Length: 204
Image 1 (tube, one colour):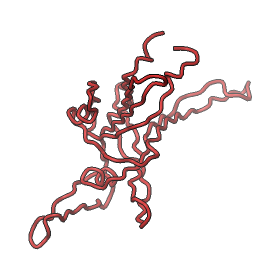
Image 2 (tube, helix red, strand yellow; image 1 turned 90 degrees about the horizontal axis):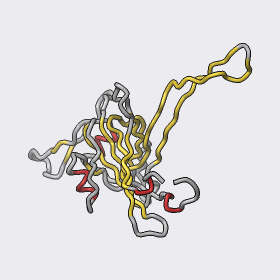
Image 3 (cartoon, rainbow, N blue to C red; image 1 turned 180 degrees about the vertical axis):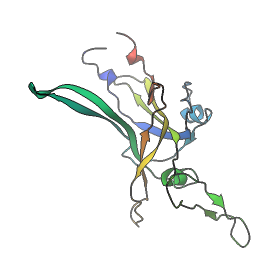
Image 4 (cartoon, rainbow, N blue to C red; image 1 turned 135 degrees about the vertical axis):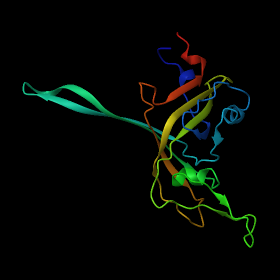
């Protein structure tokens, strides 16, 4: 709807991140428990993130076409598109560690004389492609209303392209800082998808 409308202002009050095999579709059901919606569709919850939430970045690279007759560009060509999510995970487990490190598995060391709660994760000698799907969901309440809106954003094919340093300190929780970047699925398919349960998108 055009014009000033405070009901269209969005604050990502509570959010969650999910990971799945590449190509996994976003859940289209909006039940009372969003986690059930996602896990029932093959996704896994990445757990707590820092209070900074998620930074959504879309950067398009343009190449200018110059001409002899003009000091200003006469045309632009799109040469690249970068779409990424940046966030920091707070939980260390069998899901988040390989996701941050670039794949692989956490394995049990439950073989005598090792204790039953001992596990091993080995970082590969060289990096390998670890292509996955990433899902983001957040909820908000419309201004002046009790109606809840839900946004879902899914990158069906992408991978971790950057990681932050892990700080181990006495006065702060360690974090797994991740940048996840979308990859093309080819054949003109979308790079990512928004799914919104929000009546404000109805034609005005």
